[in-house]
Amino acid sequence: MTTPKTLILAVGRWLELLSRTTFVRANVIVHNDAAYTDITPTQYASALEWIRNVPQLSSLIEISSGRGMRKLPLDFSKRMALEAVILEESPSWLQVVDELVISQDDLPNDVVCWAQCLDMTDAESMDVVRNVSGKVDAQARKDFGEAGESALVTMLEASWPGSVMHVSMVSDGLGYDIAFRPGDVEWHLEVKSVASGVRRRIFLSRNEFEVSRRDRYWRLVLVVLDAERSVQSVSILESSALWTGSPRDVTSRASWETSKFILKSGEGRSTFCRALGLTPPQYAHAALYDAAPQA
Image (cartoon, rainbow, N blue to C red; front, side, top):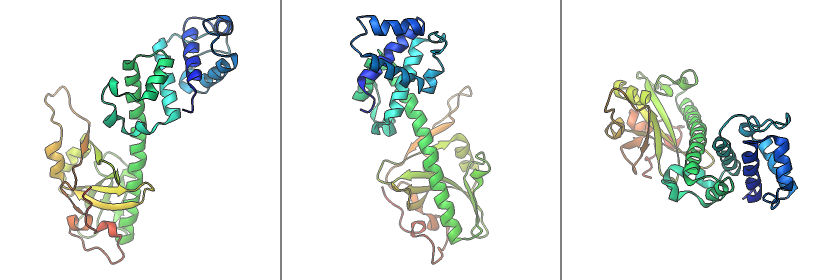
Protein backbone atom coordinates (compact mmCIF):
# COMPACT_ATOMS: atom_id res chain seq x y z
CA MET A 1 0.00 0.00 0.00
CA THR A 2 1.53 3.32 -1.05
CA THR A 3 -0.41 5.41 1.47
CA PRO A 4 0.71 4.26 4.95
CA LYS A 5 -1.96 3.12 7.37
CA THR A 6 -0.54 5.44 10.04
CA LEU A 7 -0.91 8.44 7.74
CA ILE A 8 -4.58 7.66 7.09
CA LEU A 9 -5.14 7.24 10.83
CA ALA A 10 -3.54 10.64 11.43
CA VAL A 11 -5.70 12.17 8.68
CA GLY A 12 -8.80 10.83 10.40
CA ARG A 13 -7.73 12.35 13.70
CA TRP A 14 -7.06 15.73 12.14
CA LEU A 15 -10.48 15.73 10.50
CA GLU A 16 -12.21 14.79 13.74
CA LEU A 17 -10.41 17.48 15.76
CA LEU A 18 -10.86 20.19 13.16
CA SER A 19 -14.58 19.49 13.00
CA ARG A 20 -14.96 20.62 16.63
CA THR A 21 -12.12 22.99 17.41
CA THR A 22 -9.63 25.44 15.93
CA PHE A 23 -6.46 24.39 14.16
CA VAL A 24 -4.32 25.92 16.90
CA ARG A 25 -6.11 23.90 19.57
CA ALA A 26 -6.04 20.72 17.46
CA ASN A 27 -2.29 21.14 16.96
CA VAL A 28 -1.77 21.36 20.73
CA ILE A 29 -3.86 18.21 21.27
CA VAL A 30 -2.03 15.99 18.75
CA HIS A 31 1.33 16.97 20.20
CA ASN A 32 0.49 16.74 23.91
CA ASP A 33 -2.58 14.58 24.59
CA ALA A 34 -1.53 11.06 25.56
CA ALA A 35 -4.36 9.59 23.47
CA TYR A 36 -2.72 10.98 20.33
CA THR A 37 1.00 10.50 20.98
CA ASP A 38 1.11 6.98 19.50
CA ILE A 39 1.66 8.79 16.20
CA THR A 40 4.77 10.95 15.85
CA PRO A 41 4.72 14.72 15.19
CA THR A 42 6.34 14.04 11.81
CA GLN A 43 3.53 11.68 10.84
CA TYR A 44 0.91 14.24 11.89
CA ALA A 45 2.72 16.87 9.81
CA SER A 46 2.70 14.51 6.81
CA ALA A 47 -1.02 13.88 7.29
CA LEU A 48 -1.71 17.60 7.42
CA GLU A 49 0.25 18.11 4.21
CA TRP A 50 -1.71 15.26 2.62
CA ILE A 51 -4.96 17.01 3.55
CA ARG A 52 -3.68 20.26 2.06
CA ASN A 53 -3.00 18.43 -1.24
CA VAL A 54 -6.51 17.03 -1.53
CA PRO A 55 -8.65 19.79 -3.11
CA GLN A 56 -11.91 18.49 -1.66
CA LEU A 57 -10.44 18.62 1.85
CA SER A 58 -8.18 21.66 1.68
CA SER A 59 -11.17 23.76 0.66
CA LEU A 60 -13.02 22.64 3.80
CA ILE A 61 -10.28 23.49 6.27
CA GLU A 62 -9.08 26.99 7.10
CA ILE A 63 -5.70 26.27 8.62
CA SER A 64 -3.92 29.50 7.83
CA SER A 65 -6.64 31.55 9.55
CA GLY A 66 -6.34 29.50 12.71
CA ARG A 67 -9.91 28.26 12.42
CA GLY A 68 -10.91 24.65 12.01
CA MET A 69 -13.25 23.02 9.55
CA ARG A 70 -16.07 24.90 7.91
CA LYS A 71 -19.57 23.98 8.98
CA LEU A 72 -19.82 20.64 7.19
CA PRO A 73 -20.54 17.20 8.67
CA LEU A 74 -17.54 15.18 9.80
CA ASP A 75 -18.75 12.12 7.90
CA PHE A 76 -18.61 14.17 4.67
CA SER A 77 -14.92 15.03 5.15
CA LYS A 78 -14.12 11.41 6.00
CA ARG A 79 -15.84 10.25 2.83
CA MET A 80 -13.77 12.75 0.84
CA ALA A 81 -10.62 11.39 2.51
CA LEU A 82 -11.46 7.77 1.70
CA GLU A 83 -12.31 8.72 -1.88
CA ALA A 84 -8.95 10.49 -2.21
CA VAL A 85 -7.07 7.45 -0.88
CA ILE A 86 -8.82 5.10 -3.30
CA LEU A 87 -8.12 7.38 -6.26
CA GLU A 88 -4.49 7.77 -5.18
CA GLU A 89 -4.00 4.03 -4.80
CA SER A 90 -6.00 3.16 -7.95
CA PRO A 91 -6.41 -0.54 -7.02
CA SER A 92 -7.03 -3.05 -9.81
CA TRP A 93 -10.48 -3.99 -8.47
CA LEU A 94 -11.71 -0.44 -9.11
CA GLN A 95 -12.39 -1.28 -12.76
CA VAL A 96 -14.73 -4.18 -11.94
CA VAL A 97 -16.50 -3.00 -8.79
CA ASP A 98 -19.96 -3.65 -10.23
CA GLU A 99 -19.03 -7.29 -10.76
CA LEU A 100 -17.00 -8.02 -7.60
CA VAL A 101 -18.47 -5.79 -4.88
CA ILE A 102 -22.14 -6.67 -4.65
CA SER A 103 -22.61 -6.17 -0.92
CA GLN A 104 -20.69 -4.86 2.09
CA ASP A 105 -19.33 -8.37 2.65
CA ASP A 106 -17.50 -8.08 -0.67
CA LEU A 107 -15.58 -4.91 0.25
CA PRO A 108 -11.87 -5.35 -0.58
CA ASN A 109 -9.58 -5.73 2.42
CA ASP A 110 -7.64 -2.57 1.63
CA VAL A 111 -10.83 -0.47 1.70
CA VAL A 112 -11.87 -2.04 5.00
CA CYS A 113 -8.46 -1.18 6.45
CA TRP A 114 -8.54 2.43 5.22
CA ALA A 115 -12.11 2.90 6.45
CA GLN A 116 -11.23 1.60 9.90
CA CYS A 117 -8.45 4.17 10.11
CA LEU A 118 -11.04 6.85 9.37
CA ASP A 119 -13.59 5.33 11.77
CA MET A 120 -16.09 4.70 8.99
CA THR A 121 -18.75 2.01 8.78
CA ASP A 122 -18.95 -0.60 6.03
CA ALA A 123 -22.12 1.06 4.75
CA GLU A 124 -20.32 4.40 4.40
CA SER A 125 -17.37 2.68 2.73
CA MET A 126 -19.69 0.94 0.27
CA ASP A 127 -21.19 4.28 -0.75
CA VAL A 128 -17.73 5.76 -1.34
CA VAL A 129 -16.54 2.76 -3.35
CA ARG A 130 -19.58 2.93 -5.62
CA ASN A 131 -19.20 6.68 -6.05
CA VAL A 132 -15.50 6.47 -6.94
CA SER A 133 -16.11 3.53 -9.25
CA GLY A 134 -18.79 5.48 -11.07
CA LYS A 135 -16.47 8.42 -11.64
CA VAL A 136 -13.54 6.28 -12.77
CA ASP A 137 -15.69 3.97 -14.89
CA ALA A 138 -17.43 6.84 -16.64
CA GLN A 139 -14.15 8.52 -17.58
CA ALA A 140 -12.57 5.21 -18.62
CA ARG A 141 -15.59 4.39 -20.82
CA LYS A 142 -15.42 7.84 -22.39
CA ASP A 143 -11.70 7.55 -23.21
CA PHE A 144 -12.03 3.97 -24.44
CA GLY A 145 -15.11 4.80 -26.51
CA GLU A 146 -13.41 7.74 -28.19
CA ALA A 147 -10.43 5.51 -29.04
CA GLY A 148 -12.73 3.00 -30.77
CA GLU A 149 -14.62 5.69 -32.65
CA SER A 150 -11.44 7.32 -33.92
CA ALA A 151 -9.99 3.97 -34.97
CA LEU A 152 -13.14 3.06 -36.92
CA VAL A 153 -13.29 6.47 -38.62
CA THR A 154 -9.68 6.04 -39.73
CA MET A 155 -10.32 2.52 -41.06
CA LEU A 156 -13.47 3.48 -42.96
CA GLU A 157 -11.95 6.61 -44.47
CA ALA A 158 -8.93 4.62 -45.62
CA SER A 159 -11.17 2.06 -47.34
CA TRP A 160 -13.90 4.40 -48.64
CA PRO A 161 -12.33 7.88 -48.93
CA GLY A 162 -14.75 10.76 -48.44
CA SER A 163 -17.50 8.51 -47.08
CA VAL A 164 -17.25 9.33 -43.38
CA MET A 165 -18.53 12.13 -41.18
CA HIS A 166 -17.68 11.85 -37.47
CA VAL A 167 -20.90 13.54 -36.32
CA SER A 168 -20.42 12.94 -32.59
CA MET A 169 -17.55 15.42 -32.72
CA VAL A 170 -20.14 18.07 -33.58
CA SER A 171 -23.17 16.86 -31.61
CA ASP A 172 -23.80 13.94 -29.26
CA GLY A 173 -27.58 14.26 -29.54
CA LEU A 174 -28.12 12.51 -32.87
CA GLY A 175 -28.16 9.02 -31.37
CA TYR A 176 -25.21 7.79 -33.43
CA ASP A 177 -21.52 8.61 -33.84
CA ILE A 178 -20.68 8.24 -37.53
CA ALA A 179 -22.55 9.00 -40.75
CA PHE A 180 -21.14 6.54 -43.31
CA ARG A 181 -22.03 6.75 -47.03
CA PRO A 182 -20.00 4.20 -49.04
CA GLY A 183 -22.58 4.26 -51.84
CA ASP A 184 -26.21 5.28 -52.27
CA VAL A 185 -27.15 4.54 -48.66
CA GLU A 186 -26.04 6.58 -45.65
CA TRP A 187 -25.61 4.36 -42.59
CA HIS A 188 -25.82 5.79 -39.10
CA LEU A 189 -23.29 3.99 -36.92
CA GLU A 190 -23.39 4.00 -33.15
CA VAL A 191 -19.95 2.77 -32.02
CA LYS A 192 -19.37 0.81 -28.84
CA SER A 193 -15.79 -0.05 -27.93
CA VAL A 194 -15.18 -3.22 -25.94
CA ALA A 195 -11.99 -4.75 -24.60
CA SER A 196 -10.69 -8.07 -25.83
CA GLY A 197 -10.52 -10.95 -23.38
CA VAL A 198 -13.10 -9.66 -20.88
CA ARG A 199 -16.85 -9.92 -20.47
CA ARG A 200 -18.47 -7.68 -23.03
CA ARG A 201 -20.71 -4.93 -21.72
CA ILE A 202 -22.00 -1.80 -23.42
CA PHE A 203 -23.96 1.20 -22.22
CA LEU A 204 -26.78 2.56 -24.34
CA SER A 205 -28.53 5.87 -23.73
CA ARG A 206 -32.28 6.20 -24.04
CA ASN A 207 -31.81 8.51 -27.01
CA GLU A 208 -29.58 5.98 -28.80
CA PHE A 209 -32.13 3.26 -28.12
CA GLU A 210 -35.07 5.29 -29.44
CA VAL A 211 -33.13 6.29 -32.56
CA SER A 212 -32.34 2.61 -33.19
CA ARG A 213 -36.07 1.86 -33.24
CA ARG A 214 -37.10 4.55 -35.69
CA ASP A 215 -34.03 4.89 -37.95
CA ARG A 216 -33.82 1.98 -40.44
CA TYR A 217 -30.22 2.88 -41.25
CA TRP A 218 -29.03 2.87 -37.62
CA ARG A 219 -26.53 0.15 -36.76
CA LEU A 220 -24.62 -0.65 -33.58
CA VAL A 221 -20.95 -1.34 -34.32
CA LEU A 222 -18.79 -3.25 -31.83
CA VAL A 223 -15.11 -2.36 -32.04
CA VAL A 224 -12.91 -4.76 -30.06
CA LEU A 225 -9.67 -3.19 -28.86
CA ASP A 226 -6.67 -4.88 -27.26
CA ALA A 227 -4.62 -3.53 -24.35
CA GLU A 228 -2.72 -1.21 -26.72
CA ARG A 229 -6.07 -0.03 -28.17
CA SER A 230 -5.39 -1.60 -31.53
CA VAL A 231 -8.48 -2.85 -33.38
CA GLN A 232 -8.93 -6.61 -33.16
CA SER A 233 -12.32 -6.90 -34.83
CA VAL A 234 -15.31 -4.89 -36.02
CA SER A 235 -18.78 -6.40 -36.02
CA ILE A 236 -22.39 -5.28 -36.06
CA LEU A 237 -24.93 -6.29 -33.44
CA GLU A 238 -28.49 -6.86 -34.57
CA SER A 239 -30.77 -4.20 -33.14
CA SER A 240 -33.31 -6.85 -32.13
CA ALA A 241 -30.85 -8.07 -29.49
CA LEU A 242 -31.14 -4.66 -27.85
CA TRP A 243 -34.89 -4.35 -28.20
CA THR A 244 -35.65 -7.70 -26.56
CA GLY A 245 -33.34 -7.06 -23.60
CA SER A 246 -34.06 -3.40 -22.93
CA PRO A 247 -35.72 -2.10 -19.74
CA ARG A 248 -39.38 -1.17 -19.75
CA ASP A 249 -40.93 1.97 -18.31
CA VAL A 250 -43.73 0.87 -16.01
CA THR A 251 -45.06 4.32 -15.18
CA SER A 252 -45.08 7.75 -16.79
CA ARG A 253 -43.58 9.16 -13.61
CA ALA A 254 -40.22 7.47 -14.15
CA SER A 255 -38.19 6.37 -17.14
CA TRP A 256 -34.77 4.87 -17.77
CA GLU A 257 -32.06 7.05 -19.37
CA THR A 258 -29.07 4.71 -19.62
CA SER A 259 -28.89 0.92 -19.59
CA LYS A 260 -26.05 -1.58 -19.40
CA PHE A 261 -26.22 -4.59 -21.72
CA ILE A 262 -24.16 -7.72 -21.14
CA LEU A 263 -23.45 -9.34 -24.51
CA LYS A 264 -23.54 -13.11 -24.85
CA SER A 265 -20.90 -14.90 -26.87
CA GLY A 266 -21.44 -14.18 -30.57
CA GLU A 267 -24.97 -12.93 -29.93
CA GLY A 268 -26.60 -11.52 -33.09
CA ARG A 269 -23.30 -10.41 -34.61
CA SER A 270 -21.90 -10.46 -38.10
CA THR A 271 -18.92 -8.88 -39.84
CA PHE A 272 -19.13 -5.20 -40.67
CA CYS A 273 -19.03 -5.61 -44.45
CA ARG A 274 -21.46 -8.52 -44.56
CA ALA A 275 -23.99 -6.75 -42.34
CA LEU A 276 -23.99 -3.67 -44.58
CA GLY A 277 -23.81 -5.61 -47.85
CA LEU A 278 -20.44 -4.13 -48.75
CA THR A 279 -17.66 -5.57 -50.86
CA PRO A 280 -14.46 -4.61 -49.07
CA PRO A 281 -11.77 -2.91 -51.16
CA GLN A 282 -8.62 -4.90 -51.66
CA TYR A 283 -6.76 -2.70 -49.21
CA ALA A 284 -9.47 -2.68 -46.51
CA HIS A 285 -8.53 -3.51 -42.92
CA ALA A 286 -9.08 -7.23 -42.28
CA ALA A 287 -11.11 -6.48 -39.15
CA LEU A 288 -13.88 -5.13 -41.39
CA TYR A 289 -14.55 -8.41 -43.15
CA ASP A 290 -12.97 -11.21 -41.09
CA ALA A 291 -15.32 -13.53 -39.19
CA ALA A 292 -16.84 -11.82 -36.15
CA PRO A 293 -15.35 -12.96 -32.82
CA GLN A 294 -17.40 -15.32 -30.72
CA ALA A 295 -16.04 -14.16 -27.40
